[in-house]
Length: 106
Image 1 (cartoon, rainbow, N blue to C red):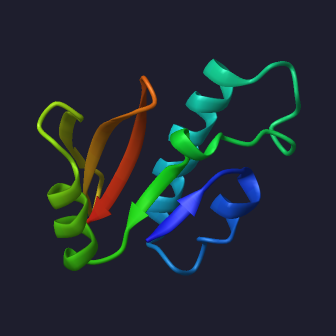
Image 2: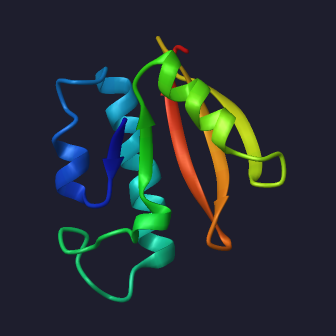
C-alpha cells in the first residue's frame, strides 16, 4: 500500500505504476489541491492523514481494506476505464471526509 500526501509522494510513484495511472492520480491530486488548499503552492500542499490518497498494490491489501471497512463507511466504488488499464476508485468515510483508495486491475 502506498500513501500519497504530497506532490513528492506522487512523483515517486513514477516507474512503479503505469504512466496512465500516475497521470490519473496527478489529476485527482490536482482536484484535491484546488478544493482543499489554503493558498499554498502545490509543491507545499500536503493532504492530512485521513485524506491521503491510498494506492492498493495487491489483492490481499484490497481484501483487508474491505474486511476493516463497514458498509456504513463505504461511500462508493467506481470503475475507471483509462485507455489501457482499469482502476477501482474506492471512497471510504474517514473523520467525516472521504478518503480515496485506488486499485489497479484487481
